[in-house]
Length: 339
Image 1: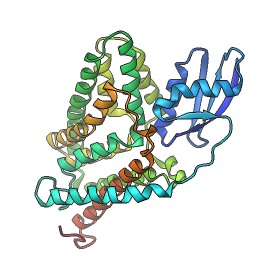
Image 2: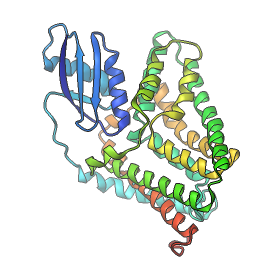
Image 3: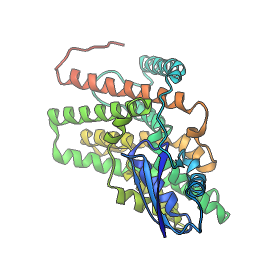
Image 4: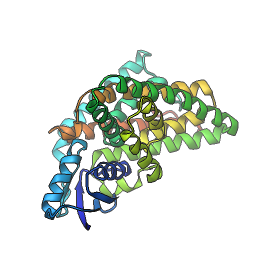
């Protein structure tokens, strides 16, 4: 038994450590895995059958590459690709412009009070589903799909997974709303939660820009043992496993999901909370459905850098408007924008 430490390229949030540990743990001969987001590294213990460290790094990278990661012996210097912004800024402005036009037409109401409308929750779901912060859910879907595909069952598990996810977000979102009503948050409580949601979105957006590496350590995450148990479900070949996996994704450490859960809590209503989380889940559905039925990996494309930066700018837009609208609703500042 030997122990090696490898540097991990592509690690960007607390969820990445869970996914990295889960995938490497499944490799034959591996007995212990410990990933570190702070050091962007992973410590691996096992019987490597006389392979050199270089060979081990390459063989484990084969397992991790579908999720956007790779291992190396030497720490890679992080280079910021400022050229990505030439594409990201126009793309983000076009999206924001379209969103404001839809708002003026009454189809999506983002501006006008501190409330997050169902249209906003749906749009945030779309952005969340293509962001790097959905690595755990995307990786979980791909892993589960591959396991069931080996048994010749390719369609039913995917349908059960998405059904479980949508239903759980609706029901549990309502439960969170009821909990909020029991607390009777009031004006100040709602304002505080609105500020938290806005700050979480700003943090997520800045992380997607990938220009402040130190900020990745600030991303909220559930305890790692929760994610590890959820990841372990992918290897359980049972009829109801996909449904169960879909349900527990509600608890996975995704900042976007947590920001919507906080808002659902502030509604103080079962129906408002459930419909908010349902709209968010429906927003994530298209990309996750493609992930479950194919080997799509946006992080592996040549344009992924510009794509994530554009998504980051859009998320920052949502965060700023929630922040400003919360301040306006609380009477701290006069209305800033009037679309």
